[in-house]
Image (cartoon, rainbow, N blue to C red):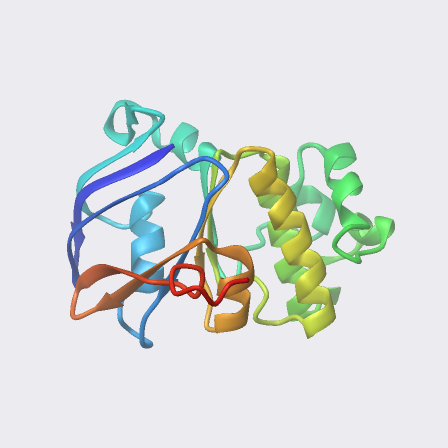
Length: 206
C-alpha cells in the first residue's frame, strides 16, 4: 500500500517503513518529536527528501492534488474556507450517510461553520476525508476534542474503513486508542522512527 523510503525533513532523518492495506500504524513520541511533521511530509505538505510510493507508484510521478486525494491528511484542527459547512462537501449525499454514524444531525451541512464546536469540527473533518474514499488516511489526534463515547463511535467508523481495505497512520496521545485501532506502533525519538512492540506482540492483546 504505502512505502516510505528514506524520508528526511527538518528533525526527522531517513525514515523508512511500510503500511499495508487494512493496517493501522500508531505514531507516538514526546511533544515536538516530529509526529505531525511526519504526517505532513507523507502528504507532501512540507518540504522533504526521499520517496513515498502508493501501490508502487512514486509520489514524485503524481500531481500533488491527486496524491493528496488518495493520501489524505486530517490535522487536529482542520481548515474551513467556506462560511457554511456544506460548502466543504462536493458530495453531500455521501457525507449525509456518514453524519449519523458520527452522531451529527443531518442538517449540520446547512449550519455556518462558526456554529461548530471543536468536537463537531473534528468529526466533520473525518467525514470530509472519508467522502474522498482515500487509500490512506493520516490522522493527527482525530478525536482529541471528543468525549469517550463519541470517540469510540468515530473509531468504529475508522475500523470499517480499515476493513474495506484502507490504511491509517494515526497520531494519538491516548495509548488506549492506539491499542484499539493500531496493530503496530512507531516511536519517534531524536529524529529516528523506531518500530516498537505492542501488547499483541507481548501477549497482552488477548
